[in-house]
Length: 78
Image (cartoon, rainbow, N blue to C red; front, side, top):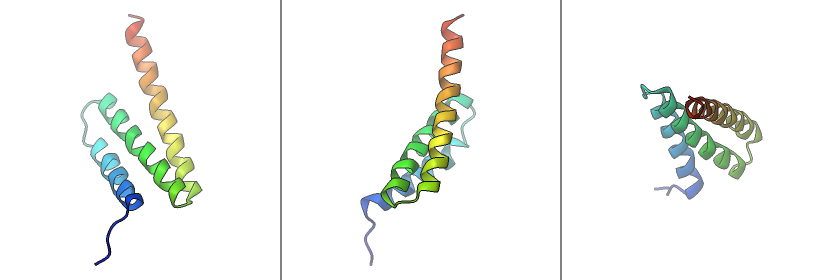
């Protein structure tokens, strides 16, 4: 039986986090968990030398971070 290495585990973790994020009712929780999954995917993609996968996930991480920061800033301004 083939053992799973650390890089593969990271890929599976990323997949689970992204999938679970879509089960969230709160958009903030969805964005945060999706962002963590995206970060895991970026690391995974760089480790397996899959730059297109790394770039699209980096893009989604930036979008999620932007909207979480924007929402947080608007709450502090109230």
